[in-house]
Length: 370
Image (cartoon, rainbow, N blue to C red):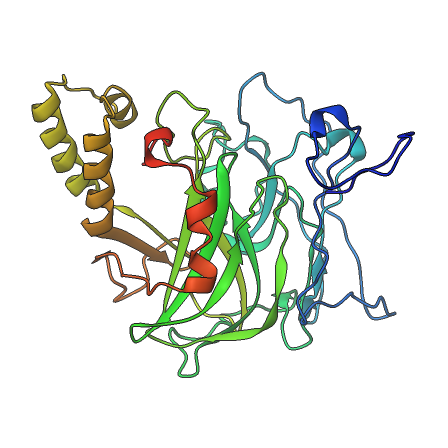
């Protein structure tokens, strides 16, 4: 945080600051870049093109996802995308939370420019699943290292490798992502039960500053390794349970991982087993004499979250089976990938994990995220 004197008669003491009485401005920035960080040098062989969505009238609803199909420039020979960044007009910067660009199969040539959930959206656009760029509030873009890039143009075949590669993959950048109540995000790296240095960690995460961070060094992920992304939320100012979902007032816990060489893995996501969750809630209903609700969110919101129930829910999440969804760019599950697994115990690290003691809200003040 920077303090601007703005006419103050004396130097501002950093002791016992009363921020409400001092004119100030908060600027979010990353002062120290990872050693892999590099700026792109524009040379004659680099071509730049822009993708825009024009004249969108934003509906009077809380969250809008807008989809538009755009034909990319034609390249007869294979090229590689080596950098992308946002190009948002100043008047729109406060309205856009995040953007993603998905590559469509070559046979899809439908024009569409409307809300993503509209009934008029062509069915075959569901095949556009391969993410080639992702941006969120606070991000300035990403320059790829010399040995990596996103292929574009030419006669594209299956240029990705079979999963897994013997030497694994190399991660060079990462973008942590939650919605409005996220305050801390970390991705742990586990190999054979041993905790390696964290893939990425932000103990002071802000949903308004979602930088794509290039790592200090490339991290090798070997076959059999486990990546666990954990988010901490502060919902102490909320009066109801926050549910997972795509709305800005729902929550999610995401890490966009940038790596090479390419493999046929588009995403890995997980959630607690719904079957196990319903069994657990049935037990709470019997103990608390709650009536049945058709909606899971309504059901959870109508439970009296006494400390006993909070403790039981915490134990449930620590031990309940997790449903895994590891999919290829076609949207289908990776062959032979696990569907169910149990939570892993993450070895404690005194230096990194002791932060939890000071910053996290008490259980009594935090509504649980389901």
